[in-house]
Image 1 (cartoon, rainbow, N blue to C red):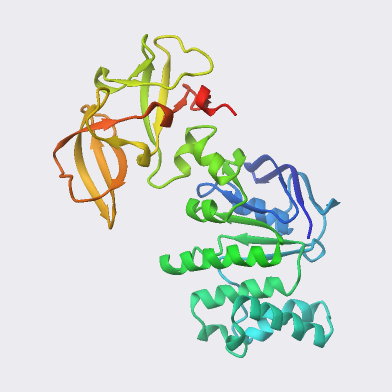
Image 2 (image 1 turned 45 degrees about the horizontal axis):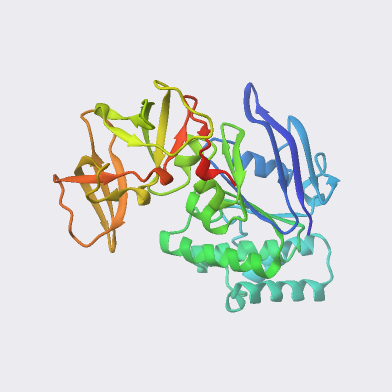
Length: 362
């Protein structure tokens, strides 16, 4: 195993710069996940680490060794693609053994490595089948097994679950986590799915427009996002964000002049200062209280024991999502009292950057 260091990675396609000076350090044995919207550069970055794309600028090191100009086969990596990339005419056994045969490994060693990987992935019964006889989840296990037998220093995964149905994605997330616990191999995993990132990662790297927005533990990014983009990218339903203006009494005025009590900021904000107030759907409360505000229920999404309630305030304002236990007590069209607990609020300045509050300081 080995750590990964990316320093100032840049990549341009013609006149379009896709990576704009990305720097990342992934520790030995760490499971790091890169997330971001389509077109942000995450797959390009992964392919650059694999050696499938040449960088326009910057440096890549694996285990302290500069691999920037090395061929993929010399980097000590194994990559799993979303399309599986299996040879249809070969059996599962031969697909998994292919890389070792090309490297001219001993037959006994090949057989031992293939058997070990098959046992780890619980696919021993599939070794003599062809890919056409496998389900999507089984094909993905074979692709992972082909990577395992190479005993790489680093695993690279490029959206490996995107072709699977929802139920299988959940089961495969568990299998990825279990695989990492067993092998402990340094892993760089790319996905656009923030649920995969939150459940699998030791650390998440949020990428947008070829630049890093924030890096940190999943819970840290969820509870202390650096800006509105990160705040709304992580979490489902996404964080509510309300435009507001600082009032002169420790509150902020939102739509219709209504006021929300704010947490105490580290730096006092002058009355009239524009800002945005963020609150996650599960932190909005519904119930009578002196500082509650009236909202109308526009739509209810019922999901078993939970409901996502879409709330409307003043005319023309965006709806708020509230996630709450569903006992069937709410009705569309009724007016309810809505609570915004000050210690659950996130404040963002006019540029969308987080404003630290006293409750967030270590």
